[in-house]
Image 1 (cartoon, one colour):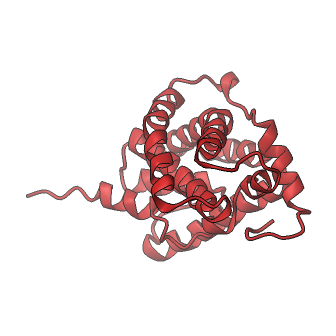
Image 2: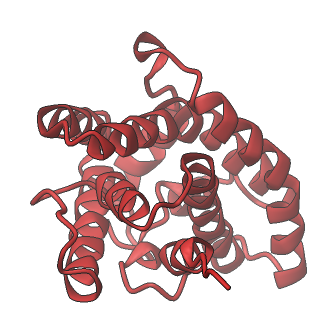
Length: 220
């Protein structure tokens, strides 16, 4: 019987138990709650879904797809180019710090559990995630969906603490996001380079204001 551990490796990468520090950051959600933009289950779903459409679907996922493909073909210059574009597209210091922190943490873990895996120094989280998925032969579409799920789960967990939401309400939000995330992952593989970009003004405002928010549960 042949074994195919790709799914287990993918679950490992997407697990909230993976110590990469995602739970430290809210990506502007903490200020959105403080400002009253997010205040209940309905507005939580609107916020996360809107952010997914304006950033995850149009920036993170298509860039992740390119990082996966270029690393598979050992195109190191292209890997560095897409990695740099992703970091440069983070519109606040807080968002850039989150990406670098998670990328460094995941790279450190990967060096321990898969020392033969080459991960670029100072890699973004997406670049490290793509390298791991390629190394373990995780299909691209599965990698995209898992990345989107991990991002969404972290946002919902933050909302459960901040709004606050009940655990059941948080699960309803995640369930409502599932078909949208699947569609975004599929669309990401068909996007052209000139369609890639960030369009989430409210997140940029919330993240910038969060850096000076008086009381904070999440890092800035």
